[in-house]
Amino acid sequence: MDQTQKQAVEAVARAAATGSLMIVRQTARRIAAANGITDEERVDDLARFIIAEGGRLGVAMEPGSREAVERLKDDGAGTIVAL
Image (cartoon, rainbow, N blue to C red; front, top):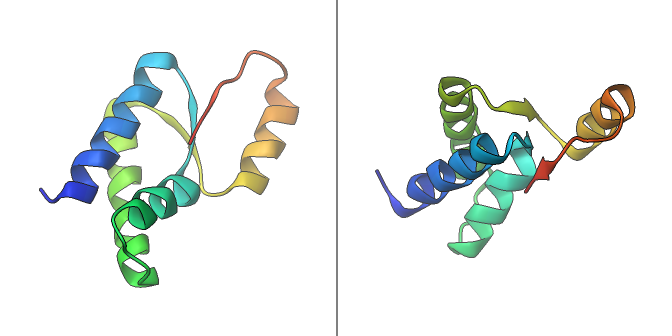
């Protein structure tokens, strides 16, 4: 497991612990940028890794911020967003 995957596991674990809604692409981009990664293919790979880990831990996820906003509108107050 490389550094970005370790950081992704930590982010997903934090979202699981707090019952947060995870925005997958934004989280993947943030982790990639923090590690100097700009290649979109590697960001996509990291997003897929986050989805797999989130599924394993039962974390609520949305692919992007637009979808997350729609979910927040539908679910109402009390939803926490993890970035």
